[in-house]
Image 1: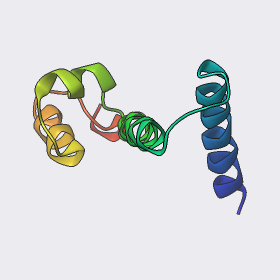
Image 2: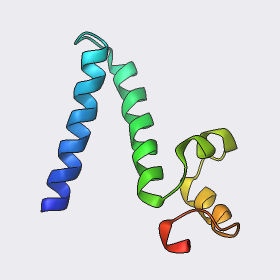
Image 3: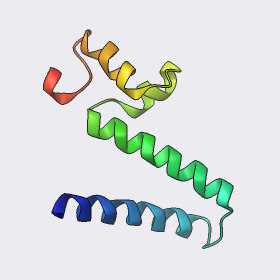
Image 4: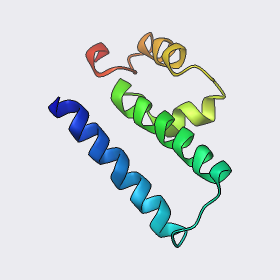
Length: 80
């Protein structure tokens, strides 16, 4: 239960930052884009994948990207 609470609090803080940046107003479309971006960023962080490297790669599957990096000594922290 604690892990979910920390994860939820982190997500709420990120959402608060987003709303504060926009002055409290946003469209559903912009919120959806932001939350997708945040989800990808957090997944990369959790998997030990460099977020910018993933974006630059053009890969659409974070797991496949992480696997390809493991072979080169990068990727999930357990691979190091």
